[in-house]
Length: 209
Ligand SMILES: N[C@@H](CCC(=O)N[C@@H](CS)C(=O)NCC(=O)O)C(=O)O
Image 1 (cartoon, rainbow, N blue to C red):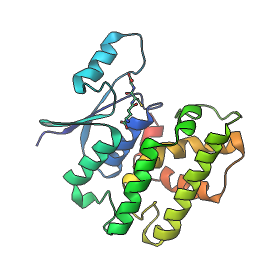
Image 2: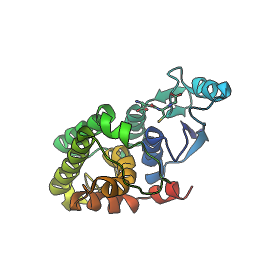
Image 3: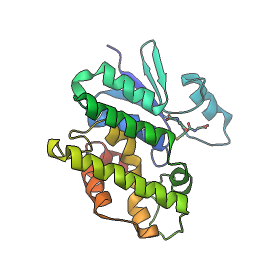
Image 4: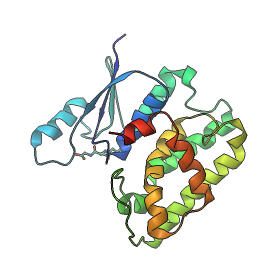
């Protein structure tokens, strides 16, 4: 069987790319990655993205004749293709909860996204965040706290074992050490998931690049 191919952007900045990359890596699913420079002046870079998907964005997953673009669609595909990896919880109610928090991350948190773009190597420095961004952070904290309260007994991640929701929220873990410093908004809820995520297979490998 041909290997999965995943086209991604720069690992330091492309948080959308990080999500399916992590879902694959943390679950030991083999894949071949193509890293494409983003937002450059070189038209060949954009052409390369377009050669994977006419949407013109990464991440893109290619599995033989099947092309899947968009981070969440890719994670859904991986979950269907590798059901034994259990990216979604078994329980229908927990699964609905996991899908909801993934969709919320995928479509929301605009202020946080704009003001705190992922940069794994950025030195920590104080900046002022808008009220909207602080409200986004509070909402992420709330999501993490609720997941840990409801599913913490099942394992160390949001829904017990490492799954789709952890992959979707992982880039925010990378941001929050900076956010804690910037906004003094940190609390135990953040630290709890941050530490667990940092121990997830894939995250350390990604940081090391
Ligand atoms: N909703 C999409 C967003 C994808 C996206 O915005 N990707 C950015 C990089 S993080 C990109 O490809 N930018 C390159 C460009 O627009 O030329 C997803 O979830 O995959």
